[in-house]
Each structure stands twice: as structure tokens, then as C-alpha cells.
Image 1 (spheres, rainbow, N blue to C red):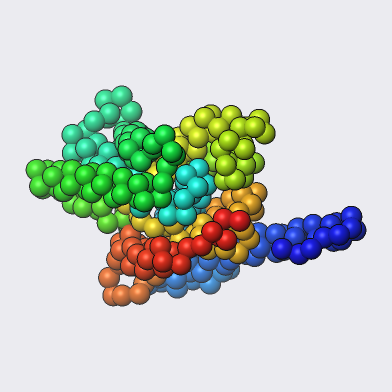
Image 2 (tube, rainbow, N blue to C red):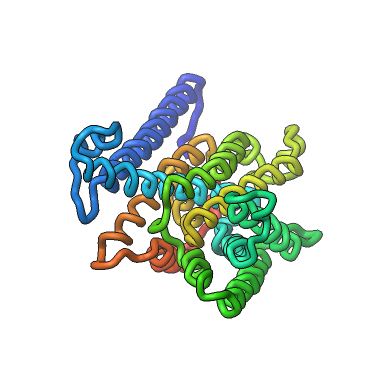
Amino acid sequence: MEKVETYDELKTLQSKNRRKAMIAIFGTILVFIISFFACMGVGNYGATIMETLNAIIGKGDEGTVYIIRQVRLPRVIAAAVVGAALSIAGLSMQSLFKNPMASPSILGISSGAAFGASIAISFGIGAAIFGSYATSIVACAMCFVTLMLVYMIARSKYGVSTVTLLLAGVAVGAFFNGLVSLMQYVADEDVLGAIVYWTMGSFNKVTWNSLTRAILLLLLGIISQALIYRELNLISAGEDQAANLGVNVKQVRYIALIGTALCVGGSVSLAGTIGFVGLIVPHIFRMIVGPNHKLLIPMCIFGGAAFLMAMDTLAKTAFTMSFPVGIFTSLLGAPFFIYVLKKRKKEMWE
């Protein structure tokens, strides 16, 4: 850290840091915009930026308008919102648990949500009350149950250790993965394909209707966690210290947990299980701008959106057939997890 001896030097340092922060945020937003139009234009039918813009507002030939507005636009928006939701959920969990390894996929939360979606699909649980929103709501409920279960198993009078949290997440995730496999084994053939779809994670079947059913939950989850960035900054430094500064730690914890459940549950209900996004994106930006959530939250929102849009476009265009994006994020995320596990240092949190 730069040595500051006078008030003028402090003002200069603060101004320099603000400039760096603004460059980082606007750079992330620029990457998001470029990724959006690139992903909208890539596919079996290529489209330029102008053709994409005209098609979005309904201009151009009918074929182009249909492809852009009814096929690509809902898919790209879904990938962007899910990427933002999973990224901010991972950031919130890492800060809440003060654990750089925490993420929805690592701690088994995505597996719990997948099980919730599976039972909703197989048995129609909640359909009589919630109708078409049943899958999303049951997935969110199971997210919260899984999160609380992992936290209670890992917690002790000494706090929550990294090893215990990871082991609890692995155990609970394996348990719910086993239940999902059991559901696949006993499910009728007409619902088996739908369950397998959720476990792989894909935007292939996203439509405006499915996006509409899930987007409210996702936006509520994102907004609820974005509003507590000050509290997360203080909690990251220590819950006792945060409480002494007037933070209601218990309330913030519940807001973060509920927000995470909404983000992960909404994501799973829309596109299935997509792992490691909540681990990769927050880590990259934390190493770039440090632990300040005022910067990390907007960067995770736009950066996570750009990341998953790019991954989905790669999944659907890299080979002759469209692959589930969950396969690509897992292939990328597993080596990244191993790298973080071996190289993580205390300085990343300072």
C-alpha cells in the first residue's frame, strides 16, 4: 500500500483509486455490451450489429426478426441474468463465510436446487398453488434448505472453518445428487429427459415464457444482495467488528442467504445446474480491484453476465451440435478450483 504522509497525498491517492475503480467498472460494462452483441450475432445465421438492432425493434426480413427476437434474445438475456445472479451469489457467500472457496456449486446448493426442480417436475409439487411458477419456487425453497443445512453442519462454537464448510458442502451435495439420480431412475420416460436437462445446465430450451417465470426471482436475489454491499464490506473484516460498528449481522446474514437462494433457485429453474460461475467470476474481480463490494458487486453483475453469455455461445457454436453450457463451465471451473485451492493466499482478502 502506498505511504501517505499529508492530506494532499491522501486526496491524490483517493482520486487515483476512484479513477482505477471507474475504469474497472466501465471496462466491465463495455465487455458486457460487446459480448451481448457478439453473442446475438453468432450462430448458424450470422447477423451484424445493425441487423441485430433492427431485428430487435422489428425491422428487417421476417426470418431475421424471428431468429433474433424469439430465439437468440431470450436465450442471451437468460444467460446474462443467470450469470449475474450466480456471480453475485458466489461473491455474497464468500464474504459471508469469509471463505474464498465458497460458491453455490461447491457447497452443494445447486444440487439441492436441482433436486427441488426434479421433484416439482416429476410429481407436480406446488403446481396446484403456484401453477407454472412451481418449479422455480420449489427450487428456491430447496436452495434455502440446503444452504441452512450446510451452514448448520459446518458451524461450531469456534466459527465456520474452511475445511468443515467444504466437507459439509461436498457431503450435502453428494446426498442431493444421489436423490436426483434416484428421481431419474424411478421417473417416467416422459419426464426423465426433463430431469436430465436440469442436471446438465443448458439454455437450449429457454423461451420468453420460461424467462418471464424465473426473472423476477433472479432480479430480487440480485437486488437484495446489491443493497447490502456496505454491510458485506464490514462483515468481511469480522462479524464482531461489524456488530460493534452498528451492523445487524444476523439480519444481513439472512438477507444474503435468502438472496442466494433466490439467485440459485431461479437459475436452476430456468437453465438447470450450471457450476463454478459463482467461484470463477468473483475471484477474478477480487484479485483485480480488491475486497471493496461497492466495486465488486457491479463488476460481478456485468462480468458474470458477459462470462456466461460467452460460455453459452461457445457451447452452442464450438462443435457441430449444441452442448449444454454446464459442461463447459465445469470443465473450466474444476481446474480453476484446484488452482485457487493450491494458490489462495491471505493477501487476496486484505
